[in-house]
Length: 244
Image 1 (tube, rainbow, N blue to C red):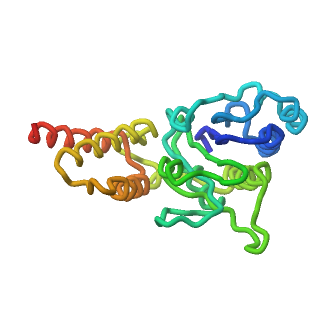
Image 2 (image 1 turned 90 degrees about the vertical axis):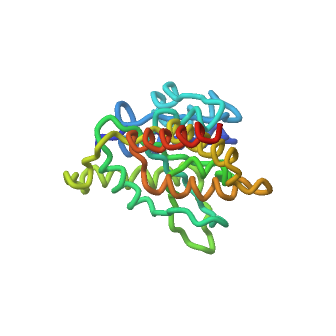
Image 3 (image 1 turned 120 degrees about the horizontal axis):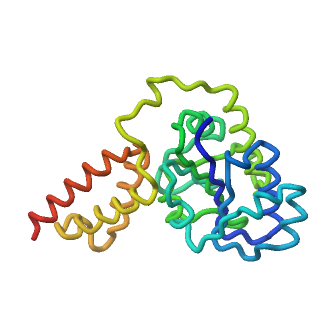
């Protein structure tokens, strides 16, 4: 596996959970050049509880990037998985950790993949999941389904560890005309789409987000390459000129 893993924790309430995640990552080899930890507005960090629970994975805590927004944490990533324990009103591509790990193992050298985990009590919002290509769901006992944050990351990190030894790249699966588009480039595409669709009166003014959510789902599913982003932005720019 040559892609670098970015474990992103959103608004973690308890600093001990951050330490537990760092320990889980290091247990499964997600440290050093392989992985990094990103924290989006943690309630308390740094904190001694995080240090104690990390049990030696202090390098991951020391190197953790603290961000103000999820968008900031995803800059430069090409593939984003959002962990979700709940079903959603809008169907979204969803895979268990093993399938996600196999997919990540086929990513090209130099790419960065984000694994996004939400708040301990409420997880990720629908808006945050819209920034993800795929939902990552850990199957559990339906009568006792709650996993703590460290355990959830441990399960996913284990599957990534196994995938490094079990999944082999095949030329037909990884050859692309251009690199995958970054998450921030895709977000700019969505912004351009929304502006253009408003200008041509295509969006429902009463509920514009419904159509945009479905477009996000479509484009996140197909894993846009950079050249495809350029083509779509070029089409939108041509439409913009016609409208003017």
